[in-house]
Amino acid sequence: MERKWWQKPLRMIRRDYLGDFKPFLESDMDKLAREARYVWKANCEWIMATPGCAPGTGHLTLLNSKKFEKMPGTGSRDILREYLPYAQKYRIRVIAYINMHWYSYEFAEKHPGWEQLLQDRTPYGRKHPLYGNGTTFCVNGQWRNWAFEMIEEVMKTGVDGCFLDGPVIYPGACYCDICIKKFKEFSGQERIPAFCDWKDPLWKKFAEFRSKSWADFMKDARDAAVKINSEAVVFLNGGAFSSSNILLGYDAGRMEKFQSFTGAEDFFHCRDLYLSPYTSLNLSRFLSAGRNPSVVFTHHALSTWHYVPLPEAELSTALFRQQQAAQIHGLLYSI
Ligand SMILES: [Zn+2]
Image 1 (cartoon, rainbow, N blue to C red):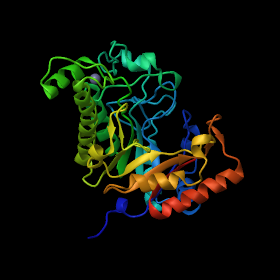
Image 2: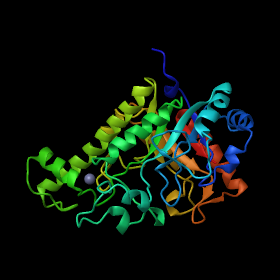
Image 3: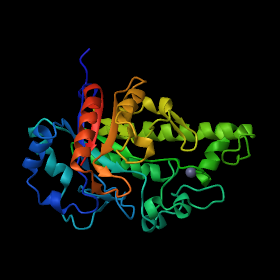
């Protein structure tokens, strides 16, 4: 059987502009696409549909849509539609990055009931501000329809698929009204268990409900993309070395059938957890244990000083080991 393009070896690249897209908007896009293909040897590129930067900009778009608010400073420019012809010229598949986990408090206040709640009814993002500032929404709430509409609008630009950076069901969440109502239907019980109370049998049911809720969201997200392009690829940021993460509610097996790749981050961070140069390679092996192709997301930066590029020698080492991983599996290299 002929394999689809995403089932063949891929090397993905994403250029990170953080919150300032002026350099991209003013660039020679033909040159950028040519470099992606011939210097970075990428056959797949991520283009930002929504920014992934402070103070939670997931609601702003870098594409033109009557339904969503545009990133300030981008005017009438639409980076997805503008870049696509250049990518296609150099046979690069385009995947749109959509930030689905990090929203500003200001945006949340316009949408009461969307935030993930802890058991004490505090929104998760108020007690644990995301990256220092911002909040996150519930996969079971009204936000989900907003999210699927965003996916449809992004797919209408003509991209080959979308990468969802979230949602995430965070530790301790979610105890919002909709989750409580849905859990009662799911369990047939009136009681709601305390988070991580292993002595309570109902907690295990709640853990199952959380991972099912996340997978249900992913199924509907996939359907939204496929509605616009039947060949769309869709995948989520998640997993890492845990196939089942109770605190997050992520279950790789449950999620697999609703995504094209099983992907996870393994950044080159200089700390004790990353002593081996083969951790990314090992992660891609682990992620490919199911039926989906795997992809490991890494980046060029030095941790502690997250946005300082790696020294040249370490960058070469990182690229070399990533090249090894890419020969077997997909790879995203973020620069
Ligand atoms: Zn909820």
